[in-house]
Length: 461
Image (cartoon, rainbow, N blue to C red; front, side, top):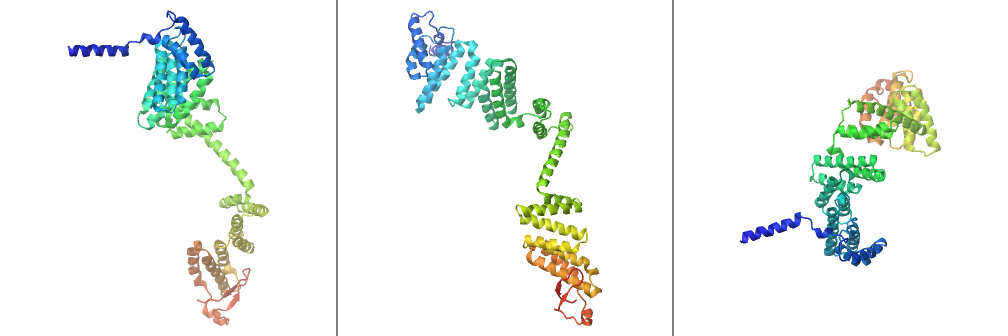
């Protein structure tokens, strides 16, 4: 007997969940209280229009409890009841009351969907929206309602579902609660609905477009992980074809497809690459031309490295004039003078001019050894032609070594190179026999002949 009673109770409970409660769908058309319910309806509606929800509540409650479905032709009592309870929800800090009000809002959505089946898609869409933005519902519950809205609405799904559904899907995927296949299905389905309405729903096409753009901005966070090259080609090629002369669109699409692993021999990718490289080359050339127009000295450095020495000298002159007239950047001036000295020495054999410019470079950048290394090289390379004999030529070597030694003393960066050259050229110091014949002693001061004209202290080998 006890088991039979348990079964009977189970049937009643199960039935209460599976069979619609007709009371929640009743209307006032056949109610003995029809006039009073209609009056309550009219009165609360006036307060709803002026957003006086607290004043509307008692009248709404009477109308709703007596006729939840109003006159059977409109779902006003459910929608207005939600406005009232959302107002209550937002204006209380009591957690228990918030929960009670939130539950009532959700209940009114469900009742509307059950009593007005043709409004189910809209009701579930709005329910998903309020759950996400207002009621702070859990993502699993919210996601379930988003799914119901899409299943019920198909292409008639409200655009208000898009952003909540997208945000939940992205969060679940990133937190390993949704796999790539499910995420792809959601992206594809919502975009399909959006595109249908953009093309066919004249009244709300703009709203669907805005919602689609916002939704896809959210999906962009995971798009690269859940879709392959083919998806991005299908998505981006129409944009490229629609804006063939927009270089920014071209760059974005090409880089995106490469990033997504599209092969370079793909016809579309190859087309993009060809145009991309041409445009980038042209843009870089234009940028460099503009830069060099403002920085002729830096242009001179480029020409120097290309072996265009005469042109480089002209640019260095222009760069020096520009710096002296403007910012007077000593680092730049030092570099420009040094490059000029290098060209004049190594390419044009203008030794005096080269030395002068090397000294100027050193003055602009104290503690820099390279100009003195360059002067040392000038002296060493011209030593054989300096003076009338080997002894006088060896004096030029001493001048060169002095420059290397000084460079080493002020700049550790050149110390290694300077030591090597000092060691190499010490073999060419003046010979003792020659010095003896000329009555020259070690430590004497002598002037180097020829263009060098430096005074050196004699060291003998």
